[in-house]
Amino acid sequence: MEHAAHSSSEGLESQSLPQKRPIGGWRAVRYILGNETFEKLASMSLIVNLVVYLHTKYNLDNVVSANVFNIWSGSCNIAPLFGAFLADKYLGKFNTLLFSSIASLLGMGTLTLTASIHKLTPSACIAQTAECQQPSTWQIAILYLGLALLVVGSGGLRPCNIAFGADQFDTTTEKGRAQLDSFCNWWYLLFTLALLIALTIVVYIQTNVSWILGFAVPTGCFALSIIIFLLGTRFYVRVKPEGSIFSDIIKVLVATCRKCGSKSNAGETSGQSYYDPLVGSESERETVARTNKLKFFDKAAMIVDPSELDSQGKPKNSWKLCSVQQVEQLKSVVRILPVWITGIVCFIAMQQMSSFGIFQAIQMNKSIGPKFQIPPAWMGLTPMIALSIWIIIYESIYVPQMQKRGKNETGRLTMEQRFKIGIVISVLCMVVAGLTEMKRRDSALAHGTLESPITVALLVPQFALSGLIEAFAAIALMELLTTQWPQSMRTFAGAVFFLSLSIASYLTTILINVVKKLSGLNGNSAWLGGNDLNKNRLDYYYYTIAAFGVLNFVYFHFFARHYLSDDDVAQHSEKPSDCDSSGNGKGL
Image (tube, rainbow, N blue to C red; front, side):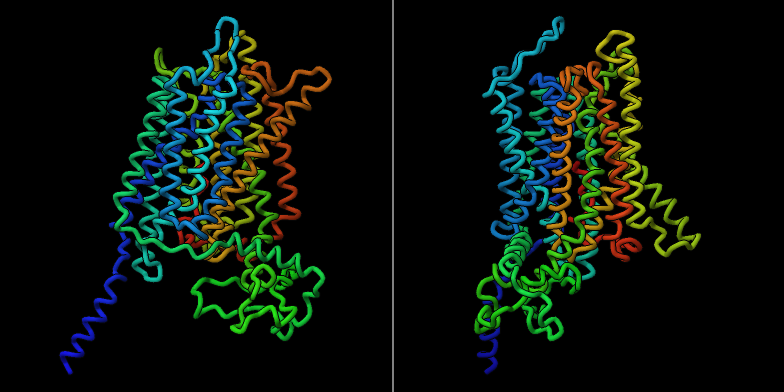
């Protein structure tokens, strides 16, 4: 008997051996952190200096360079929506990260070829005559191919990189949550280090040494990141794809439209006219509370005919009958839209420094001493420094002082206050940028030179203010998305945040073209266009965006702020539980 029992127990143990596959933990995360560090170093080396590359190597004028950059940046920010869907629904995070890394490597390699092979770029401008040969169709096509591959890469990397790291820990335990918190800290430290290297060393190589070497370095970093990622393959915990919130939202919209003729108030009191399966045995996911707002969408969960359910009580057609939870998830998205729009308008002001702010730096005195020239892209360090200084002041001085005074328990600014401050700073940023540009332009025209003798340091205030827009408006929006929605929607929250950046980029492109066309009517000189800011009125363009900022403040104060719930306005003192849902603004 004992022998039989022993044999039986051995058999059970042998059957359970295949389930020992998951390892995860720090043995896996060290490879993920290594991969992420080199990937971020490579991608940021391109982002911060792309507009300069387009301007100097492809002879594209200011408007075209800004439009290409904004469209590409917008595409990189909208692609995570599709990447998150594919990862959650079909591929899983590991495969998505691998394929995306390969696409990014091919894209960066293509751009390296454009810098290496002279036939792939037009001839340099003739300084004496200011004549610039424009790129041919096939030269532009190769450039766009490289940029498109990088868009594909960002679509998978941005929504999955931190989320895949979070999968390596068991967050149902206290130890797992502590490890995840530590992982987040390491991720941000290494990200910041990679960003600093990209903004200083790599940008200096690109601007002052060689574009070939400056692009070869990030290409090598992409290759190294893939190698490191693959070395940790046997240690990774791979969560199988279980479905995507994107498809649920579309199903609710379709089901609502199909039941437009139904009355959603029928049977509300009995609670039996709506499909509301119990959450517990089938799912451990966090649920969204039932609400009485936006009742129109309740039709999607209404059981109009008992035949809509099968013998097990499940919908026969998920595109005609959805669960109450699916409906409430869509409602939670719709409720945030008014505040989301406010954030998008703020981002339009914030993003100007990445294009026209750099163009201003190009036409200013960049000399430090007799020999050293500051690369224009180094101005991108200013927003990051301003953001870091504010966080230190806020966490170390402001919050403790407010707690001591007892004005509120957390001592933190409310969500509404942070949005309002962010909007005001966005207006102030554009006004300061306009005044600075007016002074730069007047100085250059007075001296009859392309570059103004005024030092590039005069741009520091406007770049610093753009960093503070991120500190208040961008981080507040990201925090709102992740705290308003349950854990199951965190990946979706990150994708929506990137979508807001994408829309801001596309709107900037539209605004540039509209301003250029309208200001050039009736034979007037257009405010934007060409390669010389001295012939433009960039300051008027900045003031236009400032005017939109004023309208944004009025819109938020009288309308959008009412869509912040009491908890949104008064709370948000706790750190988000998953680091994949915060800090994405750094990738701007």
